[in-house]
Length: 147
Image 1 (tube, rainbow, N blue to C red):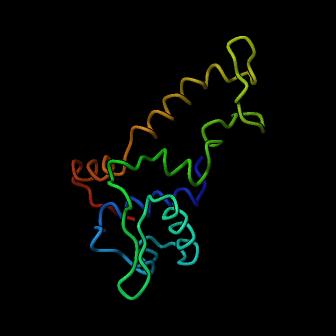
Image 2: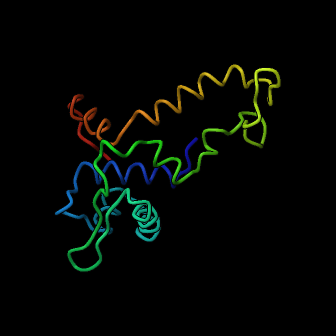
């Protein structure tokens, strides 16, 4: 399960992919209010994403945030790995340590073989799903983006 911090980051980047443009940055207060995320907490998340160049930030009265790369170039995998780390994709279902030493001959946990295909599909989903894909899915469905 994704951490709340990661869910907030994903929601914030979807929001920015949909509403901001390089020339039209959105302030932290507006994002915080619209997403119902505490402003100081959201600020830390967004600054962290800006350091990774997923976001662009500008200080000052007309400052705020916008995407730092095209929405097509930011995958859910990029966000999850930045916030929760790659360990999210290696966590074992029943043991406390990651399933990183698995081989076909030596299983690190009894359910690893059953779960490995699901894990591979999950990683593929996160890598293959960009912010642009999510925005397109909302447009195709005719559903309004609600946060």
